[in-house]
Amino acid sequence: MPTKLSNNNSVIKIITPARVCLFGDHQDYLGLPIIAGAINRYMRFEALAHDHEFIEIHMPDIQEHRIIYLNENFTSKDGEIDFLLAGLRVVKRMGCELNKGFGLTIKSDIPINAGVSSSSALVVGWIHLLLEFYGAHEKINTELIARLAYEAEVLEHGSPGGKMDQYTISLGHLLYLETGEDLNYQIFEQSLPSLILVESGIPKETLGTLRNIRSLSQEAIEVVTEFHPLFALEHCSVEEMENYLPLLPKHLQPYFQAAIINHDITQKALTYFRKDKLDVGSIGALMSQHHKILKDLLLVSHPSIDKILAIAEDHGAYGGKIVGSGGGGCAVILADQGSQKIIIDALLASGIKKAYPIEISHGTHRSYYD
Image 1 (cartoon, rainbow, N blue to C red):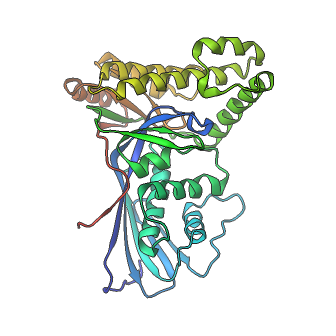
Image 2: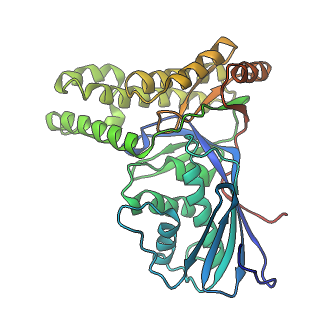
Image 3: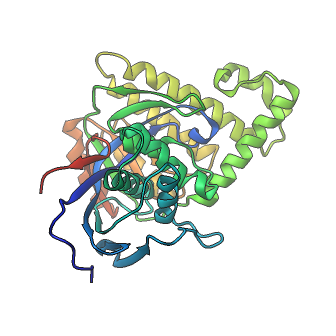
């Protein structure tokens, strides 16, 4: 049972969304841009200070209870991925004084291991909570939260991931994010109508898939760069790509092609998002093109996901794709309002685990309401 808390302090509540990637899967760790959106599935953090020198964490959804003592050095065991300890190390390095304990309850309706970044929602919300609770020498804003969450989730663990998840979840909305060293982003005012999230029930693969594809993609780029030292992935067109393929061994060619073609698809999608009125039909078609590259070149789809997308298309969807690292997880579908219920009913009738409407959401934020 959680420790009895002091009644003298106000509760700190943080709400953090999930995210879907619309364009740019397996691109952010190459420094290429993505288009993604925070969605209205949330992780909720509720903390209250107490008089003990530890943090007590209660996660009823997964029946976990944990105590972290503040006099520890927050060192993870060799090879262990511990986002909570990593977050404490990161905020401590930036000057947070961990001088009081608190009790924390974390609840969530975000699908786990399904490609919508439940782990990043945890890290973003945890970093946000620590900054609010202990204070910071810098102004607490969503960019700071995203940067520290990226450090805690990716850099602290030598993970192969990129910056998409932490920044999309922190900043919120629908956004275009340039993920290179000079990080820039554009938040789109308009939202997408009639998005559907479909849970396949097949657990996705993450670290192994990411490491393998990242390694092979980077190897392909390095081979090309040996012959052409001025080669820049972000400036290579699909037409120019054909000139470089003969330089690569056959097993690396699909990864090079995927990087170039998916970047081209993302840039085409960007032109539609920057228009005053969204052409959702064209955006949906590009989502399907992106999925085809993920499926045929990077081999990260799954028969269950392909079945979902085929059913959706047969019932009027504009397009759709797998979300996340691949191998399972969820699909996101773009439709019109008239087709949304028809598509969901058809998917559920086919035996799919879950399918439901989603909306673009705000990023991580502090709640002042019960």
